[in-house]
Length: 233
Image 1 (cartoon, rainbow, N blue to C red):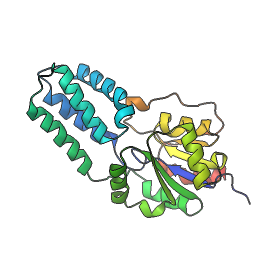
Image 2: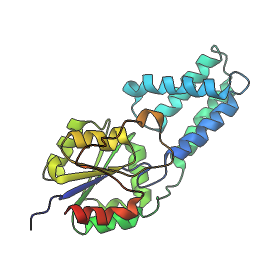
Image 3: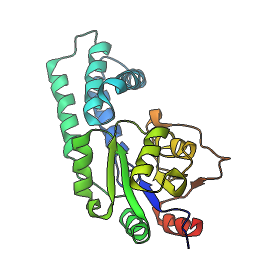
């Protein structure tokens, strides 16, 4: 019997393993370093503004985050930030890049179960070297039929990926925690979008869910994914 879905894509950060909480921990460290210059809420707003500005220059990932923190530190101190603070910010970024990978609940079981019956691919964005490191440390790399590390997750990006690795978006599914990056563009491309909520979401990744779309689903965690895929067929 012809299957409705032949290819399932998985997001990586905060879908298969923890990620955003390390950014939040570093952001708190950043606030502590600059506490004598500005209030934490003001600093957070200025940092978010810098991150938005810099996405087109640095892309997603830790390195761009560190550069945005340095830029923000220079701005909020009127260019008086001590060299020692800059050094601490760089060190915080290096700690993030060295942090071990922690899989989220059901991640391995879900990927293994889907891989038994479907093509599975990893679709993630961010710094190439860091994403490759995390995938290698996760122990999940051998389960995927393909890996795509992209600069942005847009509708056309998914069309190209699912055309290349599968049978087109209409017979593909994307699973992730970002409504903006993992769900909305896939549904717009004609595929299935399965939202797996994560407790911490970067503000830039917020978007309204395509609640009335026939191919939109939400599950509480990855443990529910195999039954969902089996039910769709």
